[in-house]
Image (cartoon, rainbow over all chains, first blue to last red; front, side):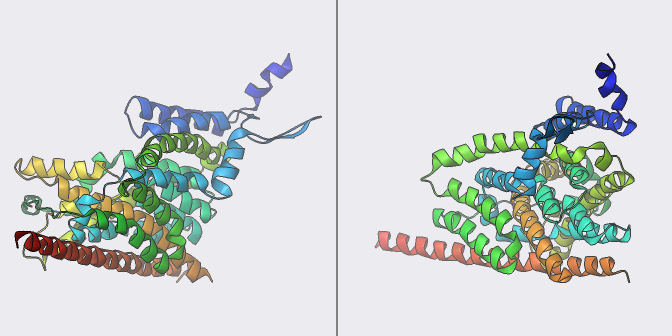
Length: 379
Length: 50
């Protein structure tokens, strides 16, 4: 009867910690509604991969030989071999984005760039803390506030911390309504938060909407070739949306494709949440650095807006800079809420959406440029 | 200075410059496309009025 207790007797304390972590992620997903589409599969997957001799991982069975586990197979095929899952998800994300508010006010592009500061700042801090440069870069990309970008970059860089990086990215994206107001208030005065902005959008032609994804792909690809997968598939999805002749494909990308990949991505990433890889001091450090990245992103965007105001007649409310991170649409809503709290007649939403959407481009560009620069430096 | 720290600092400088370079080029192209669209629109309106 000893074989019945074999599994229970094999559990390690680290695996029990991972059961708790998995349970916590499931709790956060269901009870607190924090990014449930990713946290629930990740949480459940964390439990699956940490059961001793789990059948979801490759095992060597005595008398039988090697068996393949589904989660390990999904990881090696969908992420390790080609980074297919996060890249394909970008098609759906691109199809969901309306770049109209950004195209009608091109200055908002600058906030999408400025709010990626936290990525590079965190790379420096991580390097100072003793992480190898490839791991430091993988940790820094948490600041992209974009799950697929974080997973993709850390996989390309072969980081051993892909699990904590993914958990940190998704958790902090969900916590944007708590993190950002605190960071914004730190670097703005009440007078600055009261700056009123009027919204007079210019019309965006269909031709511009169609040419935009093509132009972005070519320019980003020429300057940072490593960004072509990220930017290209995002823009491909957007072109499906904007062309007007592929509505069925656009809807498929936005709904069926996105949901299918999201479902698989969460549970697949759980492969990197095995106890021996996840329950380490480095995981705590990475969670801390992820928070630093988000705060530095927000502060970077806000300070850039204040810098721009030195040259502009019509001032920009500096909180708009904080909306330049990729956490769409939460970041825009945070800025709108903070603006309305200071002055209920001040409607910042459409400006914030423009910056927020720019952040989506900025974050994938940052991922590609980070890879490009690192490859060049390591030659 | 530690090599990894040096690379990280270089990445920060080049990365931010790179992102800004790309978005400024894209923003300028979008701005020019908007101007062309507005010019074409006002030309069409003028010819309709005539």
